[in-house]
Amino acid sequence: MNETPLSALEQEKEALKFLERDFNQCFQQMRHYDAQILDILKFMFTAYSALIGVAIGLYQFGLKEGKDLSSPAIAALVVGLSLGLFMFAVIVRNRVYFVQVARYINEQRSFFFKLKPMGFENKSKMYANNGQPPFFNWRSSHSWLCYIIAALNSTLLGVLLYIVFPCAWKIVTIGCMVLLLLQLIIAIAYLKFRENKSASEAVFGKE
Image (cartoon, rainbow, N blue to C red; front, side, top):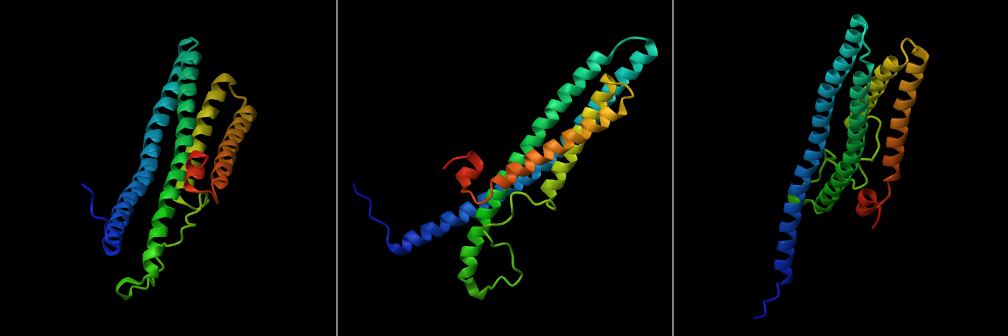
């Protein structure tokens, strides 16, 4: 049995329902990405504190007892640093998802604000620019969280280098600075490269 085609008015109503559902779901998704980054930061603070405490404790205990416990301490720090670098990459990747969803939400706002529903003019200038937010903004909360994670990763490397090269402060300092700058340079370049791309290109790297 053939279905009766929808009239133009019915199609418009269905389209509005779709956009409303899509807007609400995307807003929840955007909040999820935002909260996820904070959860990662909380987890990393706990993990870093535990790993650094264990590594330094083993190292100092080994010195006190005249035993070489540097190997398990180094192993713990290497595992922690690997985890930290992975989490840093996850945060940067989550920023891409967050920005793409936020821009889509802004596009929908812009579309409806142009219609001035019930005379609403958006005098407060609520976000309606589908080119915002930028993928990288040094002042954004996501960027500051990246700075913190990058600094913690560098601190972990510093403790690792101190155990491997005791009192070699020059090596420790240079190693920390190199890792810190390397993380930030790669992250910023990756995010800026996402600009002016479609959603598929920005997220998946292809149309």
